[in-house]
Length: 181
Image (cartoon, rainbow, N blue to C red):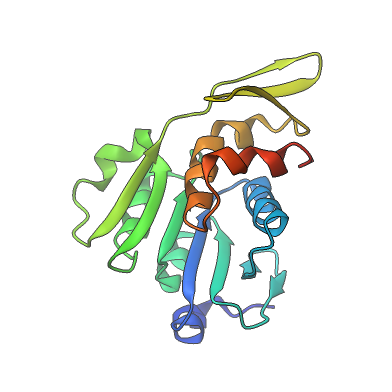
């Protein structure tokens, strides 16, 4: 089992990346995309799964504000179902100069945060479900996905902005999603 109380001291020399979500599919989607492009990373999941092979990036997937704040993340993705009361607390623990990707509906909750970090708000992704197929609307047109997870689809633009932090640009983002299930 992972001792979450020692997160920052253990990983302070790494780039700490937080996926703040109640939907485990979000982390699976991000990891699938990073692996598709052969990006190396370590991770800690609340379910106890972990990989620690000495990579520069350590990802933490958590919906616990206590764990998230102990981690002192450099890069954060907040998904749309995160409790509003937790948004400010997570944001004020982002390392100075970090990045926060968040739903635009949380914009007013970030006004009082004093530390400096880059803010990347995102809109809910437009999608439709027809004949048991989920399609998302993108600047490149409609893209049919293998998943039917509508909560994941809502946060897809945020996941795409988040992946840009690791060198995966929009035009490349949807390729791995075509076989994500």
